[in-house]
Image 1 (tube, helix red, strand yellow):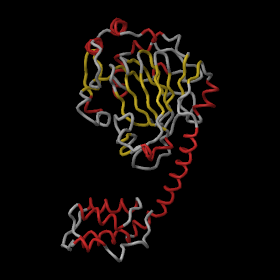
Image 2 (image 1 turned 90 degrees about the vertical axis):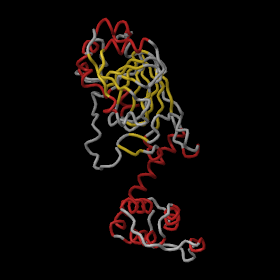
Image 3 (image 1 turned 60 degrees about the vertical axis):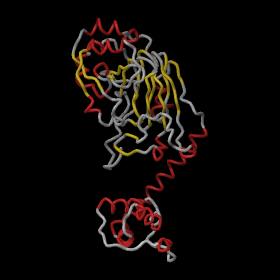
Image 4 (image 1 turned 90 degrees about the horizontal axis):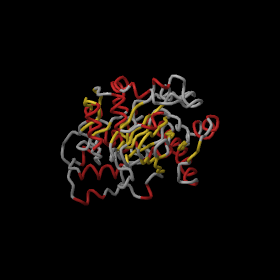
Length: 352
């Protein structure tokens, strides 16, 4: 935490390195860097040393650090730092307790809505639900069936994803229109690729073009509202599709109709370890195992595979990463019978 009383050490070791002052003015990006590092609790000497290694002059860097430390704007941030530290402590306490529990996502067969509400919806506890879609006509979806009943409308697809490490963040740029049967033909070749995927990002046009498929979506009485036949998002892609690390802004039911998916999940209590850099996304991107993170600093990852007919409940705020293990077809729903609004009381402008 920033402490305005702690400045540079009197026995400045940098002088022994023969570094001489040189006149220069730091730009605003460097001033922002200095302020951010001070707010993160970094010692002034450490900031000075790091900026000198970047080739910046001693006198200018020292003056900027001192100016930042004594600026009323930065001093005003101290109470906010204390509040943030308290919240981080509470989250870390929650994460510590969660790690004492089983490192698995439970499976519940034919769970009643009342039990789901009490055990999962209100406790933000993921669960795989089984036995609830056995009566859905959509369980018979195959490529041939989809070709026969839908015809050949134009739909929207996410394409050219593999060349862009930020394909999900840049999803608008990856939208492309294709004929329905052209997509089915590509899937019939059974490729192993993340280069094309029909996702929720394509829901506007696809909801109208694939209207016939919504007739094959059954009901989930007590779980979803009565208007759910007009709701939901359609997903279809080959083996190898990836949805990178992110969290949703609502409670979510991921219904798998065909194929298998592997889902890695991290509790919102460990958000401070997930490198949330923009909106609801993580810098970890497509790295499901968080392999670049030291074991001691890695959040606990819960991994589950879902097959045909399985429903995964993804609570609001839970980080998740999804990999297609085969050709997959599915739906996702957010129109629960219970309150599912969680953004109205978000007051910040930073990562959400």
